[in-house]
Image 1 (tube, one colour):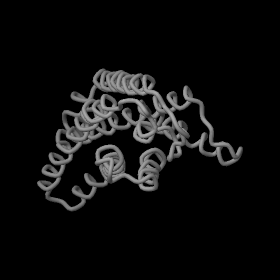
Image 2 (image 1 turned 90 degrees about the vertical axis):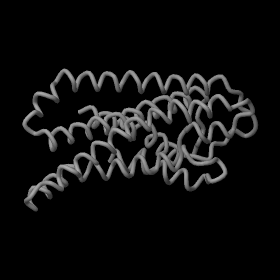
Image 3 (image 1 turned 45 degrees about the horizontal axis):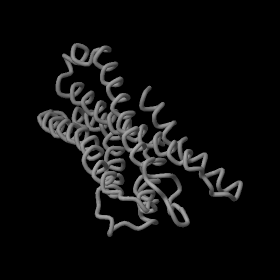
Image 4 (image 1 turned 30 degrees about the horizontal axis):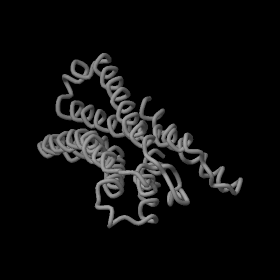
Amino acid sequence: TNLSFVDVCFSSSTVPKVLANHILGSQEISFSGCLTQMYFLSVFADMDNFLLAVMAYDRFVAICHPLHYTEKMTRQLCALLVVESWVAANLNALLHTLLMARLSFCGDNIIPHFFCDATPLLKLSCSDTHLNELMILTVAGLILLAPFVCILMSYILIACAVVRVSSTGGRWKAFSTCGSHLTVVCLFYGTIIAVYFNPASSHSAGRDMASAMMYTVVTPM
């Protein structure tokens, strides 16, 4: 339920504005509106990140410890994991939004993107952006890396368990349970890593927009 809600909100934070720009023929956005969009994008991206990790753990328990599933994945644990995800996502988004708000912007202020994202906004600033870049690499990197490692470990253990299954039908059932989740994980993390964790010299506006479209619109869909 949370993943469905987050994905609807994730797409809704960008797509309606893009459609309005095309229909009205105006591509303007206020500074406060830009920061608000960036905040909510960060919240929902982080929530997707955390919930994908929780779902990977859920599949690990279901496949590797099926007889203990109800005992391990209690409603209390699920509620705790979701609440912790919301708190961490909002704190991270608030940190990056406040750091962005302290910067000065000069020049044409034209964002080569279809939404207000941290990377293109930092390129427009005439202030020192080293702290912002450091926080993206450390805090945002840690928030992305920890769930990704959790997902990776879960699927390694799942693969080991599935290999030991003697029947072909049992193996297929286990892999089909994880298929859609694994596809989304690959698309989501692959495009985010391509956008945020590559050297600035390797970035191009077109490539960044295509990658952003994948994780903000395609994976939620």
